[in-house]
Length: 149
Image (cartoon, rainbow, N blue to C red):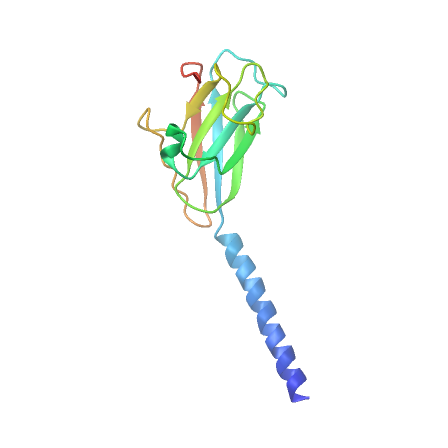
């Protein structure tokens, strides 16, 4: 009888710890909302979307980092949300392919695509710090000035 009591107590403690851990993990997540503001001449719609990429290193500018996330918007003034971001800081970049053929996953953006970057000191990518359990919102304006080679 004592063994089953101790076993039940141990299971109850483990279950409580798991629930606490889940709640703690939930509170520790980071969220980023990126407000895209494309002022270029291209048509943005369901067939010509803007891709917003998230990186954990500024080295993506030299082609030395893969995106950690990608979201799309079908609006020139759209908002995309990245959730459960594991680390901080992060870096955001946007691509608009006027042909509508780029899916954001099949390699680098095609030549001629318009590119934008979250920055406060162009052309250097700006770090976006997000504390655990917090949501940060940034604006990423871009136009057709910068094109992919």
